[in-house]
Image (tube, rainbow, N blue to C red; front, side, top):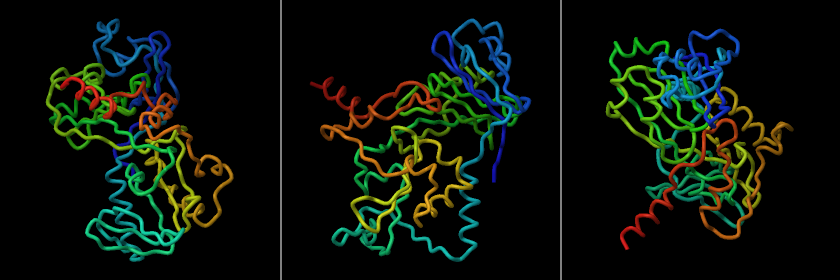
Amino acid sequence: MNAGEVPGGICDSRSVGRATAISSALAPPLLTELPSRRAIAELVGLNPADADTDTTPGDWGYLNGNSGWADAGRSMQWLLARVQATGRVRFVHGTATALLRSGDRVTGARLADASTLLAALVIVATGAWTGALVDLAGQAVATGQVLAYVDVTPTEAAALRHLPIVLNLSTGLFVIPPARGQLKVARHGYGYADLRRVLRATVPLPQLHDRPFAAERICWYTDTPTGDFLVDYHPGWRGLFLATAGSGHGFKFLPIIGDHVVDCVEGRRPEAFDDKWRWRGVERTDDDVEQVYEHIVTEDGSRGGKSGLVLAEELTKNRRAKM
């Protein structure tokens, strides 16, 4: 199920607030400190002579030989095939636009083509689109993370085969070694950021630094203030259960999350998750979306840096500029 596995690690900043997380296929199965920019530059294959400049991915860090990455797309394809093979699940393709209600009970969903699906229990597991169907009372919000792919030739891929996975925990910028002819660069922190920075600071092939992106996307997260999931029955609507708010790290639980969701549905939620996964509202004085974003924690040890551009703010700037 796991494709392209590479061991990995994390770096933290000491002097100028920059941090780097690094994983390498060549790393021993222990943590190794990277005490300087020069040590990081040598590991990722950059010119050590540039180590005193701001072009390296960090000024302190560590290498973790036990971590790695998994191919999310192929993992989901594998899981889908396994579920289809059981013959017990009927897949209906469509877009849910609203939940159906009768009194205080949710009875199903209406699709974009006006058709309806009825059920005794409706489980909403719609990620960043959950807020379009259910009022989440401010406890989770959709956030966008920028990512891009750069096409590489077989020769370039071979030259980068030992490139470690690098994550700067101060900026959230990271790069993953090439897989199937593409190099992935992204930001683990919501809002816009210049992805060229991570290419220049991490990839030791100058010809890739300004190469046009082959594809650009926004990866949508559903964030909670603590990074914990929301897996619980809705307190106000009978027949409605939510399994959402992956908070940017839901995929890594793919092999086990389904069992725990079923436990929660059947009233057997593990005690350790009882407080973490329960429904909880977040008090706000009004419906200003900015207040929702302000309570989302991004500097929690897994996210990088402060939030980037927020759409509402940018639209306001544009309107003011036109006046």
